[in-house]
Length: 189
Length: 104
Image (tube, rainbow over all chains, first blue to last red; front, top):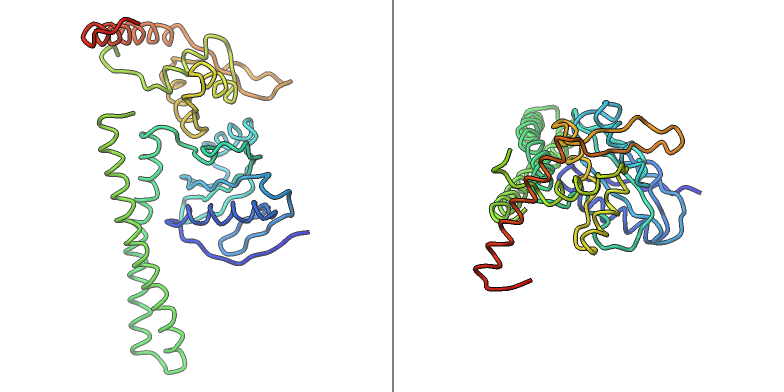
């Protein structure tokens, strides 16, 4: 029996998305098909599985990603599916929980943590102006357009402005995190 | 090559690959060697393995159709690097002990 939930998480909120997916697994629903806004779950033994979300360069079937997925599958980490976002892909994995609190950490050293965060950081840096541009177009349509469409344009504009603001906040938060890790990297590995 | 320290992950991976091992085997071996202190995460291990393959410090063995798991083994170049690193670490430990006045 599958359960379908509609939800949307932007790229900078992958951590929260992962927490949600793991809460679902703890409640007995394991992700079986991810989507941009539509998630399918299968019934499972509560707490048996963990879910990991990774933001990767390139498409699902790029040679590099295929190689990585194969490597992970050798460790019992199964790829559930990928969602593509502008040349990148969010890959969703599931694996049996060992009970180790560190099992959701896919990067155990500072260097790989930094380079992973940087990837999301630069994605957001490029996404912000695009979002702002989209918000401006909708705002101007709202101010000058036909009365019937003004309401919809206004709603979309408000939503895209909110998204752009959230993206900007995420850039600063991530930038701060990267700087902190880099400072740490000067003395630790 | 000599003046740069190896990362802990690389050091332990090279040490583990004296005999052929696959990815998960490396993680388990490193955990055993370090008495549970070093737990390599999958992403970190994958990145390190690819860099080591590029540097030719390790080799990927031809695939075994039975296990379908890729195995890796250290090369001569890798062994040389490991020896150099061991000498560097020995110097650190020796100086540390001398100055801190601790014996073993």
